[in-house]
Length: 230
Image (cartoon, rainbow, N blue to C red; front, side, top):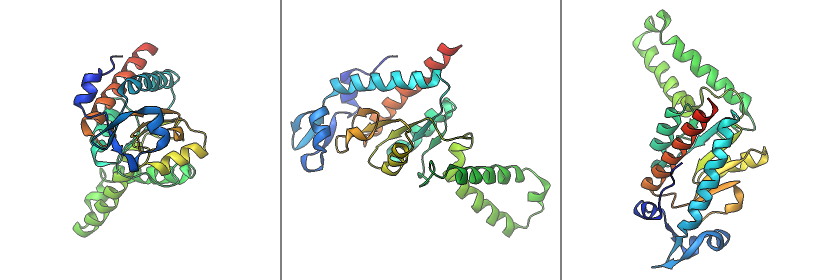
């Protein structure tokens, strides 16, 4: 696994944190390098160490055949989350976390089964025989389900691990995971409590280049781990 260099992370803007009044004191103490122009700078030497630990953990999970669920619903993360998840056959959520998804997973499964049945129906004569108005109504329903559930159609049980981009934005998912003893690997800026997750990757989680860089490493880690199992 080839980790990004400090220079590469700086070029991606990974080192930019937040203004002092928006910084979590615990995160600043653990991962802050200093303040420049009123902005906390993230210590990328520590980021490299934490990134390595997080990737080692992900590799272990893959080798154990554990299910990792990717979550990244912010605009900067949506495309990268989907791309890497689909490349590696990993379930993902990139539109909206469904509140109670873990605690009420059986309800989510019903939604997934409904989506699968509706998608199958589109290939039948029953769909072809629908009126134009009926098709429009049907397609609106299926599009709504696909938006929320298409990334988790393969999920038949509660995930073993969550991989989250921006643990502050996805705090509901983090809380559900914590309540159900599910480990969380999280990309997080310096404005969040680092103790909320099990494996934190402290970087600028508002930077699209940084997110893409980290997700490339995640993809490489999963591929390598799968090859190691063979």
